[in-house]
Length: 69
Ligand code: SF4
Ligand code: SF4
Image (cartoon, rainbow, N blue to C red):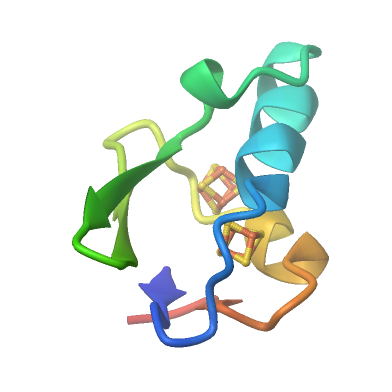
């Protein structure tokens, strides 16, 4: 997965859809993508459990995620 931090607003929709689809619960702490604050920007880290299903990219309202490297 690719993350474009300049588009990300930190809305966490990606984490909610990831945890909902994989764990049946909207809980950002269960998501396979973790957001790290770096100053005013965010950095996304995909955990080893990420299966690249790309649902986070599909539902990101700002186009900040894309499938692929
Ligand atoms: S859904 Fe998109 S804009 Fe919202 S936190 Fe995730 S990557 Fe950022
Ligand atoms: S690609 Fe799928 S498993 Fe990986 S973070 Fe996005 S929604 Fe979660």
